[in-house]
Image (tube, rainbow, N blue to C red; front, side, top):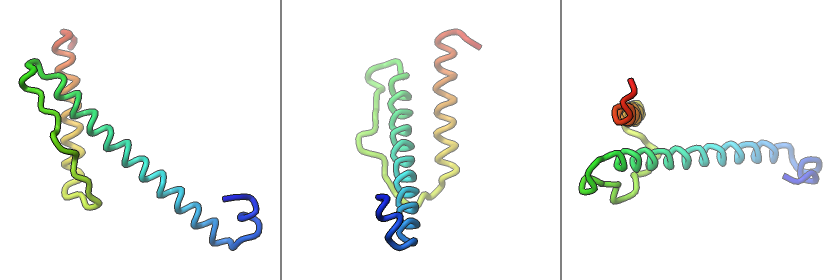
Length: 95
């Protein structure tokens, strides 16, 4: 929003700019979340010891505005991360 728009246009225009900014931030946050899911999948596959076991996803994750089980999906990701770190600790001999 330019200063001229701020001072001379309708006050409701400011609300529209604020709403768009919030939408852009939410969209960027979702992009980073998806990137994190791909990162976790890649690290999980890289931790496998045999090259023949590598199975990075062959197609992109399905995107949807309606999540069937968001709590279970989040718990699954957290459990995968915990398992990953426990594998790293075991390999280094740390308890």
